[in-house]
Amino acid sequence: HGGPKGYHAQWDSKLFHYLKHEVLRFLLSNLRWWLEEYRFDGFRFDGVTSMLYHSHGIGKNSFDYFGPDVDADSHVYLMLANDLIHELVPSAVTVAEDVSAMPTLCLPIDEGGFGFDYRLAMAIP
Image 1 (cartoon, rainbow, N blue to C red):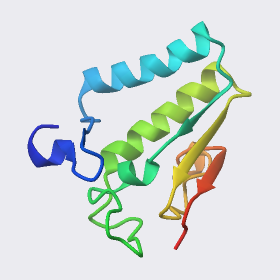
Image 2 (image 1 turned 60 degrees about the horizontal axis):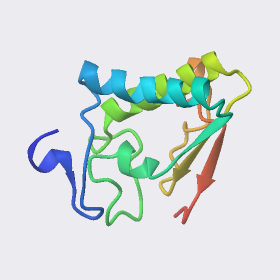
Image 3 (image 1 turned 180 degrees about the vertical axis):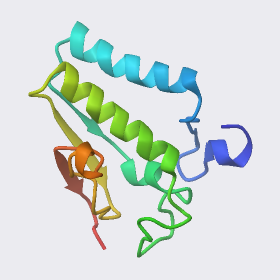
Image 4 (image 1 turned 90 degrees about the vertical axis):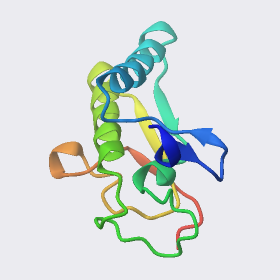
């Protein structure tokens, strides 16, 4: 993303534009590369809360899980990532580090979830 939407002020970092085909291709191909080249057996996705919401969860004590602050583009990426990982290595484990208690994080994708195997629940409100 360009402009303020593409910048995470708290972390002083840039943000991916998950709707761009090139971005999805880059991110998903990286997952595949680590699985195939180094035989990774899982991934820990750090800072998932920051991805789930446009506000990045900054200054929030409670979350509207399906309201206007939700970044649906990142939700799609996370579902695609989990689907790819589990398709390539069915025994792989994915862990989402989350502070928002997003209720569908560890549901299977075909049940409307994100497909993570585990949640690292940090500072759940």
